[in-house]
Length: 360
Image 1 (cartoon, one colour):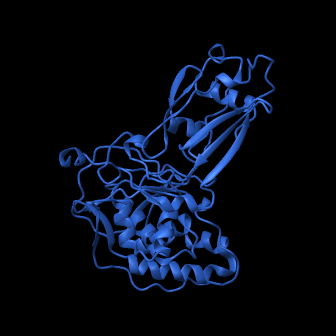
Image 2 (cartoon, one colour; image 1 turned 120 degrees about the horizontal axis):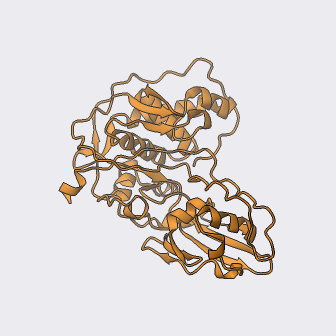
């Protein structure tokens, strides 16, 4: 396992601002649903959480936890200090009034993830507050509460400075998501590569998270358009919408591994992407009265690694950030190096009083 893992995984982050987008409506279908509407573009991954790309990379045993972080911000490369990175990632991912230990766990996970890239840039879109963002964006976002929230995150960044979650003394690819389906997912079920510390753990707290179960309804016309976008030919699609979906097969964590669709079998992750679902833990039911499909999902995000709502619940139960990280990444340990940046000072123009938006 060690030899295999030394061919390491490198994660590239695609953070998207909108949690979901509405499916495009097809033109009215004919009575047999053989629409000539061009297939719409398949929708992107809806959740603002990491979408990895694997390449071979050496183990990074000698790392500098204080080194600036290379980011790719909407296609432009830049370097930011560790402090700015910790603040900017936490602000994008979590509400700034969450428990300290949940925020610290998120900060250390994001930093470890960035270091695990082995020199590749951490992808983000600061203008859309996706993945990482700047103090200027946060000032506009938080308004009068900027000084309060920013100073709190900066103080936590001081505390998290130099802390890195490691597997065999190398930075762990500590990916994260909003809400699991009750158990976190194994990496190979999402990104093909099995990572020892990303094999799934119980996260029962997530069932109590807001938005754990959601339902979205799409008309048969909308679903038909997506079937075309998935590459199905019109003559492969049965006239009766009730015959389109078969029963899905779920994996051990409750995510759809595969599901038959018009005689072909698709991976649950592909269907999640195509139908812009909150997670791959979903069921589909056809409503003949409405000629529509109801997709019911559990959780939010790819489900691998740290569950942010699970971290919040653990912190509220008295667990510290080290315990949280070691729960979600079994076998990993926190390695601490001395911080290199000076104590934080409030940016010029800091002011107070509005409400913060939620995390991913």
